[in-house]
Image (cartoon, rainbow, N blue to C red; front, side, top):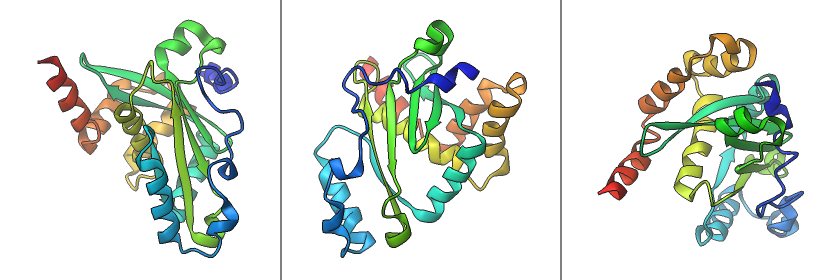
Length: 206
């Protein structure tokens, strides 16, 4: 899995923004005097009409995710597909989290391109206690609901209180030969995160 380290370097094709800063999205100075709740509403309203994934993450949750990401910068998540599941590898690169399908890394190695990037903005964390997140995706591979399912798994695995859940991330990083792919699917199914997606896909079949 060490080849995942290069993920991100190849990601600036297919409509991804290089150096996507918070100030390129909105005027930080203008929200300095607003409360966290007001900023959250502005962020949600801004992205509500756009086909993308976004979130406002509380400071303590982001700190937990961030601290764990420093020691475990890669992990695996499972995306429900019509026939079973597809695995995606996540690789942290500073505050960006890049995802690509496992099959891409297996077949293309260092040339594997990102198919989803989650951008985290901690600029307002100290003052407002929130971290803003948005995403860009390659829509030829992922739709918004699928990207959201992957993004939700970041919190499922990195922000969990369950020792057994986070141990999957640690095993993936430190003892890959012991890692069991099916345990990720079991965790996802237990959480219920992929249920709506699975239902929608099954509905599309008919």
